[in-house]
Length: 415
Ligand SMILES: *Cc1c(COP(=O)(O)O)cnc(C)c1O
Image (tube, rainbow, N blue to C red; front, top):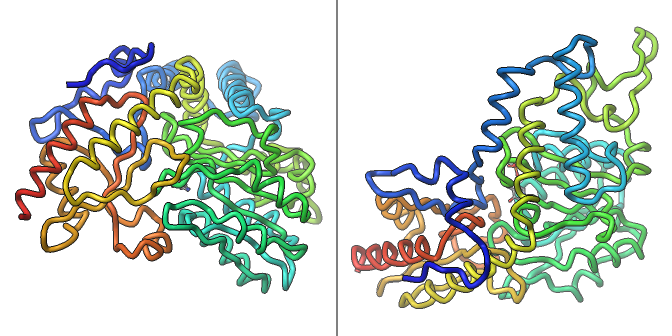
């Protein structure tokens, strides 16, 4: 068995931080390979939330009593942690939302307010439904056009097609940094540069990138960058919209209510400054503080070390899976994150991914099977669904061996 990673990365010590990883499922040790769907939480995050409710719980930004000040201080510290994590220029450029989906809807609705008939919005053929549907809704409201940059058989964006589609009619480019289904890493810096030459703004879907690679929104020159807490070891229900201050300031509010105003009369309401203009109502305080703890945790492990170790898992996993007769990998881009989508065959054809997933589950292995919220991508590759193993830094080569063993078993059962 291959246990020792070739670099100085103490995966067993890190695993011990994640209580759920020592659970058993159907009597077998849990092998959690569904990190692209959601990630597990380290005790540092769980304890931060526990401490919040035991010692600090209070509403924020609206009380001058002790607990409220403590909670507000902790929340704003988490905002600065998030700012530093993606190297935003200012903490007011960090808006807390429910997740990637809400962040994209916020931008599509609020920034989208300025879109006019005949304008064009560009997305790619590998987008998650949450980076397709809000733009379709915006196009329907405004009479704008949605254009789609095609991808090649390896699952890479066809950059010449992108350049051809860009024009002065292009107002928004919405693109995923890393594909949740294929693992493709898109050249977002170049994509942004080209969009800016045409005066378009770019929103990057970072749901799959922030847990795996270090992101610098200023170096990328991203106009908007969005991600979900739950995929980066933080709680569900919390996410981040980064936007350049100059853009956010010109945008109308998304939700109206408390906290987003500076004064209200029945005749006229004036809005609060950013970030509060976009944070109506009582925020998800435990989620925000938990996100701060998760980002501190990831920073402590180190994204460069994580990226290097996960590439090793990806290479090992790719080779091991291709060792199975008749298994094919969907998504073979040159630059990939630690996500492997695949189809398993027997002599009669593809075994349905749902059957594969069910049998793996019996062995304690969690993978995702289905369309991964990317139905147009499934159509592009001519499959109804795929099996997807997605790794986090706490996964091991031993776990990949368990997966391969179980997949061979599936093949025998369906032979
Ligand atoms: C998960 C995911 C989303 C949606 O995130 P939510 O947390 O469900 O809002 C969007 N895009 C990508 C690439 C994803 O992986």
